[in-house]
Image 1 (cartoon, one colour):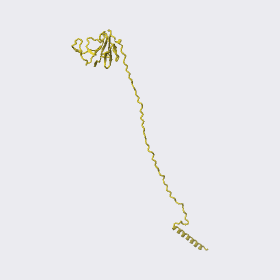
Image 2 (cartoon, helix red, strand yellow):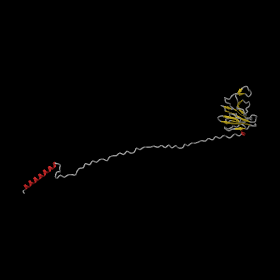
Image 3 (tube, one colour):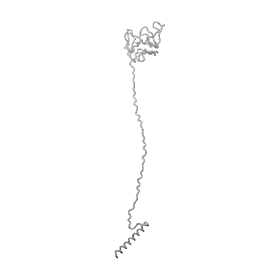
Image 4 (cartoon, helix red, strand yellow):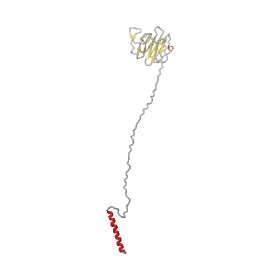
Length: 219
């Protein structure tokens, strides 16, 4: 076989192969000699579903505890003690049964006189303007300003006009002061001085007086 004839035969064979490949390509069959590559898989990646978890609603409960502390009560007890009675002998005058004293302010001069038939307690001093006028000592028909107040026996307390200052010590000496609140008692007569109310004298019969330079009371 000559080279020319071989070339013609090879060309013819090649033409047959080309025609056959074209025919298979038209109906969708794979072409002869085509290398099928790996199938491409389109992977759709779905993002993980986000789950939103709502935390339970927090209920803030505030409990207010009222702690009542025990109240501390301070009790102040004021003990008022009655002063001891005065010693009558510390006020005794020169005459038997006579006891003289002044108020601490020395405004009033007083006495308890028990030596006579009618035990009497009384005072001299500045009488309040409201004191009633009384019969004068030397002129019973004339009303005068009293210069004394007294309680005698079972009779009520009363103002009087004394010709003689009978509630001063007879010897002219100064009588001692009777301390505030300290009672002086001789027989059934008792006198006591209060800083605010003044001097008071009373009898066991239930009569007496209270006197200051601005007020009085008799009963």
